[in-house]
Length: 328
Image (tube, rainbow, N blue to C red; front, side):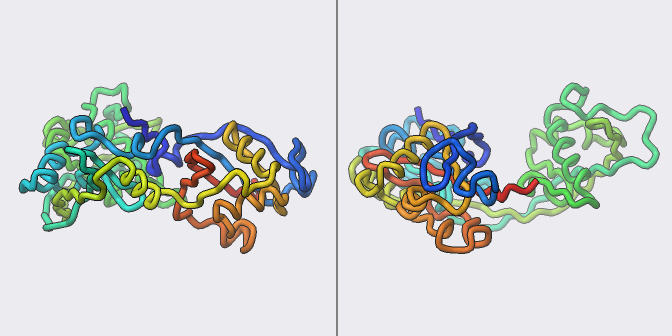
């Protein structure tokens, strides 16, 4: 079984526990190189990836990722005609590729857009009621609406809450200021879409007027692809290193203090206040995170890293760097 809980798409949702700090030029429990004068703080979190990259990123043809379209997988490997609409068959992208091994050959899975399809879907929008109805329907999880409507109300509520304020909402869920019922099963089960459906719902203490429109969407149609990339496990490991791993660091390249930072960040997390100790700077240079020490730390270092893995000796690590300027 594969554990990809630490893949790019899920990393930002994971939490890290409290850790250690460093005092001026040494490893200790103080507030950092600036003592009590807390400035910009940089936290390093490390997660060890046990085993090979193949164990984590390559699936067996007979045991694919649960999120994959298995019909698309079969079609791609056997040169059969098959397309998916809207949804990429393997959720693969350059930063998070998908691989499978079949018959001793390793394949990188992907897709190409081969057509455009126009579809009409109902869109649910919610507006805070000026004159709430006497008996609005409970739109919460404990209400009487079908499960698909619960999801629709929750997402449409996000858009309604953000409308006219400085707040935001998850653009991947909210569409056109509400929720689009793309699933035929969800449409068939919906009470909100029925001709005699409710005019208002309550959700988290607010009563909303219900608006349903039918709108046209243009969606891509994908053809799954499978590109052979390796004919053996060692070559596949090399492909994965070249694709996913950034810096390669030998233990002897680091001072004993820098090695202790790796140990502390692996066990929990490690943080220092700018300006950083020599040991911390040495490690940041080794993993090629120079913007944190050579540039404007607030402006240059906040960009997304091109690689989030590095190799330390024979061990792979995923790392995460977070800046905190100490402001409330």
